[in-house]
Length: 242
Ligand code: NAD
Image 1 (cartoon, helix red, strand yellow):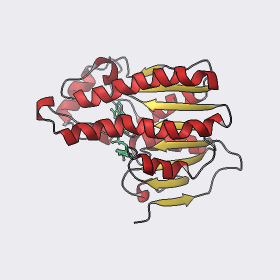
Image 2 (cartoon, helix red, strand yellow):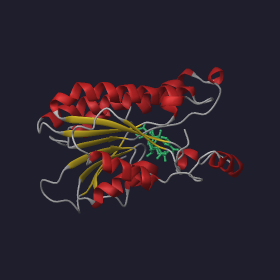
Image 3 (cartoon, helix red, strand yellow):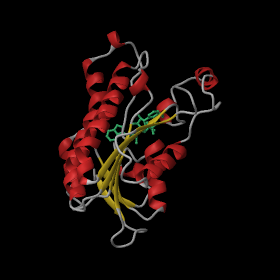
Image 4 (spheres, protein in one colour):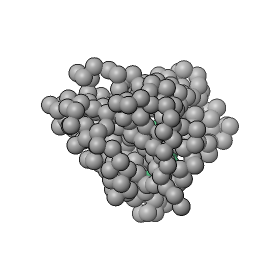
């Protein structure tokens, strides 16, 4: 199967370059759409199939963000990078005692190891311009923890610590690292919830509804455009929930 493609319409020469993981749907697709509108040259990664990225301009790649060699093959396609959005993620819901080691590994590899892969390979490209923005997608559970979501919460807690640490490491090089921590966003990740469970969840959210992928994309875009003194922050977007 062909796992790369170029949909090259839409950006100008010298356009800023942005790489987004998990761009096929949900929050990642909304982020890709908003950066496309702003004229970015996009490097988009979907997990299974480049067809899942159809409709989005940019360079398309399919593969596992947790696989260092795959991310290296994507990064090799560009000598510079201005913005990196680490969005790929998976959830796992269930008691810890029932969790298989392979499920634990998948959550940590997808949600946390992927950030090592992309950041380690992106930093040298950002250093060339002495500038760059890295935005990691965390979750409110990274801070508060969630019952039945130990692995997911641990991975996102790891994302928060990773964000703060890398921000300190890269501030002298003028690269800012921040994270967004959404509450409940209306995407496939929550599609297994029954209407009853959704009603119950929403009744606990002061804003009275789930957030939308577009609202997360808007916050990410704001953070990318924020001044260089803003770094190492985890910004919660949860309608006042947690
Ligand atoms: P989603 O399931 O719709 O999208 C997840 C994306 O990640 C998909 O594009 C999927 O293909 C991709 N992905 C999964 N495993 C991958 C892998 N190994 N390699 C590359 N890509 C992979 O869910 P979403 O809600 O859009 O999730 C996006 C991010 O937002 C995730 O990091 C998630 O943890 C986080 N988040 C979501 C919510 C929510 O309520 N939806 C809340 C807090 C945080």
